Figure 1 (cartoon, each protein chain N blue to C red):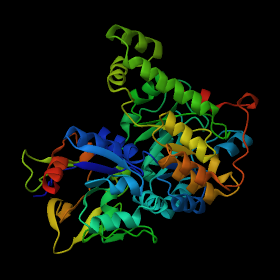
Figure 2: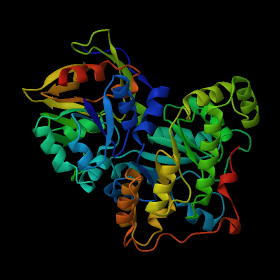
Figure 3: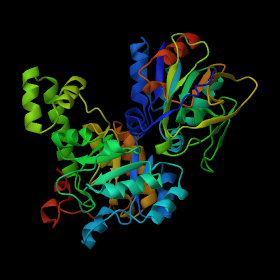
Figure 4: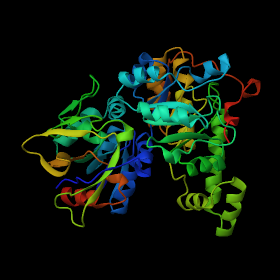
Length: 190
Length: 297
């Protein structure tokens, strides 16, 4: 199992460290050649506008969309959720997401950095109690399509969801000091 | 299934977390909404709102203060990426204003004229995180002990000269490397020599890096400058005068963004360096009237 982490910008190192700890072979993905050699991909938190710009300049947008359509398993956290969404609200006019999961995302839905927060989440099917959700200038999942399974909510809003092999979280499991979300993703997409 | 308990805001994890999200990116100085939009268009991860870029502060002289709140609000309204702003060293009332404005990061910056010659701001008292400059490891650890959630090597702002940034990065990272092989009793000596808290010295020796992200600032003027400091070990870059004092700011901004991501791939740095026009005019450090990096203690 070769796990790629999109390493254009953001918190890619934390994801790699967790995936390595869980026994996966890991690699940074910055080029189409690196993308072609992986079995699953994590798109980390960071700035989604920066990431989309770099996806285009690196020639990664089309190969990535094709790989996901072909069944590549993907976990997108925070900015990664925005990149994978069907539609983005409050984004830039030229911000075109990959439409890999049937959700509508709203950028910076919880406010500015002073509103960033942590909260305990009950994650459906995750053993071992609540999971500490770290939300940093986080996006919200405004609506989900019929084929999307919601795995966790916060104050009645979905914050963790999946459709097929595409998983998205509005929070940062890579900052929780708790590997259970990554562990479950690896188990279920293997 | 919803966690409806009161969420925790302003925790160290949330404050340092935003710095983690800015890694591998470029934070650009902007003086108005139009420049902020150019920065966002180019792929900046954040903008630093200030009234004059450092090279103009250097030229104008006089006292440099926090920017007008109306100017910061104009930039906040123009872009969707995080907006940072600077307060003077030790000027906690300016920092309170910036927090009240909802800026995403406060830079307690030596580029502005210091307000306190003994004390920096108590940064633990704020919900909004702080970044502070450092020229060496002791200075970095003192700022972290005061609550800074991101360190930037200072370099010499407004010069377009990378030599001071390289000196500061090499000093900080070289000392960290040396500390990782020190014996426990030697760490007491390190703490004394660096004038830094022992627990932070021990933590750095164990981790082999600072407990918060370390970015680089002060003198980056080309894509190759960005690639240089990233290869030396910076985790992201601040570009001040280097973009909007260059001949083609939009092209220079995009090129520095790509070079920061692909810093280890010389073919990409080469590609983005072609035909950029003139970089900002530079300055020799020895001929400066004022060195900003010496401010702060």
